[in-house]
Image (cartoon, rainbow, N blue to C red; front, side, top):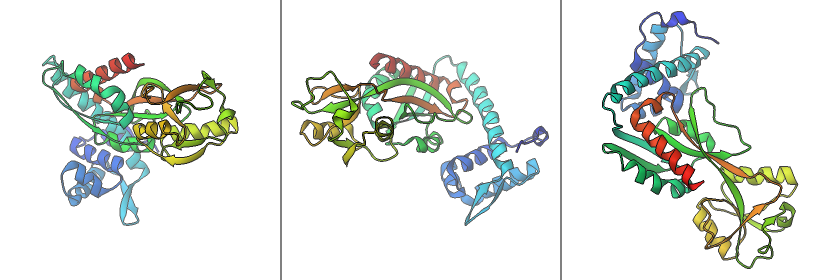
Length: 308
C-alpha cells in the first residue's frame, strides 16, 4: 500500500512520528513507552492522535496488543524520511560548532570489541568533547534492527553468504571482511599442512557457537557445499574459551582470522572454501550526519583498515 502525499498536507507532529517509529521498531506499546520514558497510555494517545491527523487507521488489535496496519507501515517509512531530515537539520546546527561533541552510544559484539575497541577509543580520545559509551552485546543478525533503536551505532557481523541487512530503514557501513580459519591444537595430525581440505575434518569434534550466530551459519553452509557435516560437541560463544578448549585438545573450531590468538592455537586455512564474516556498522538513516556519529564511524573504519 502506498500512502498518498495528501496525508502530509496537514502538519504532522514530529513527536508523534517518533512515537510511531519506536512502536514499529520495538513491537509493543509498553516497549515503546519504556524507550520514550513515558506511560503506555501516553503512547497509545499519541498513536491515536497521529491516526486522526493523517485520516487513516495506523494500528489494529492483535491478540492483547496492537500491530501496524498497511497504512501504518507505509507511514513508518515516511516517518524515517521526515526524522532523517530533522536529524540533518540538527546536524547542520551542530556543524556550526565545527567539532564533534556529545555522547555516542555504541553496541559491539564481543569479538569485534576485542579486535577494534582499544584502537577505536584511542582514536576517539583525540576529539575533545566527544564521549563514546560502549556496550558489548552478543547479537545475532536478527536482533540488529532492535538494537539500532537503542544505540547510535551497532557494530555487527553476518555470514558472507547470509542475507545483507535491509537498507530501506537502515544505513549499513562495511568495515571489514574477516576470513574464518580452522583452529587446531599444537601437535594435531594436520598441523604440518598449510591448507586443509574440508573432507579431512570429517571425523573431528567441533566447538561451535550458538545456533543463529554467523560462525554457526558458516559451519552449516560448509556442510551444504561440501557434504561434510561437522560434529559439534560444544557450543561456546566466547572465542577465548574456545581457544582454550582447542589448545587443550577438546576439539577444533572455525574462528575469525584477525582475532585468533596464534600463540595458543594453530591457524590453518580451509582449501577451496570462501568462509568469512562481514563486520559492519549499522545505524538509523540520517544518524551519520551528526558530527559526533560521523567521527566515531570514521574512527571505526580507520581501525578496521589497520587490523585488516
